[in-house]
Length: 378
Image 1 (cartoon, rainbow, N blue to C red):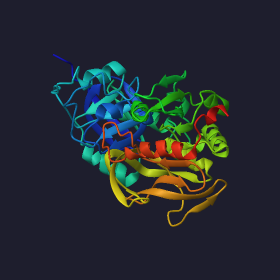
Image 2 (image 1 turned 180 degrees about the vertical axis):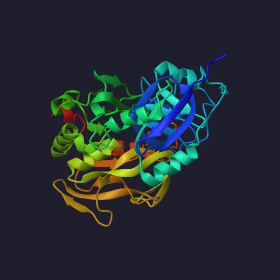
Image 3 (image 1 turned 90 degrees about the vertical axis):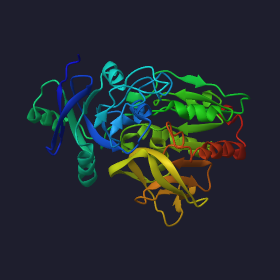
Image 4 (image 1 turned 120 degrees about the vertical axis):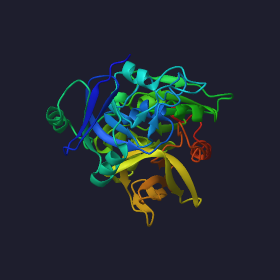
């Protein structure tokens, strides 16, 4: 019979929840955020963009389908902590190879279950994402809060280098090779390279510290700026690199953190959202087509760009191409005089939905239209 450990969750403002340990027994601190996704928890846990965050699942039942060896979006669980209401006592899915609780413990993720996640989510919505601690090792609430208050906030955090690949690697195109893309790994997810490979793109995934010469050395026809964690205001190196790519006129596509990087390179500022967008059910308007998409999000920062008209930048006119219909936040940029565009959300969308998959077609079409085949070797 397994031993049950009491666990506590303490927010930086002092609010405390008491439950049971879920996953590893220990103590952890991070930024408390919530995701409204009702599925895809394995993809969430392995998403590098959740590095240093304590993730709260608003869906009450978690772990129902267990875990498997196919759905990971990276090589490890990245969350700092995990919060659920009712963990499933057993997995029930033909693809399952293990239990979520066991995997959390094996990955060293300290979690808590059995608390009122609805009340916690409402608290974060009203007061904003904040630092939090989870402990199941006997630490008292006052001591845990002291550690929480001593932890660095997400604003000002430079984290992309902590999740980036240490060495370059290549994901080959499926079928006939058509184009080569250099992807700057700021926290890339595996489904990005899968979606590119399905379109005949060979992707060279390069460390976040890569130089322009490093990107061009792979013979890149285009450059991709990946999703990732942290405050984009700290990412001066990737911004400088994106600026050089724009100056060269090489096609450029950025997703999420990559969108913020490209936004900064175009001259826009960024800012921290109150509680962010996280989940797989966020409505976004594609202003170029008038289509409304249900999309996957995971971002706590956004680009500050005018939504009423195109803005003049050092690289020509740039317009906001996508907006979130919940709050009007900028969800995409399109350069009108340069081969570059971004989206703030996740068209790779593991575990779904697939409404925005067409954006990879837009990237392929951008490369074709720019006529830059072999430009990386020019």
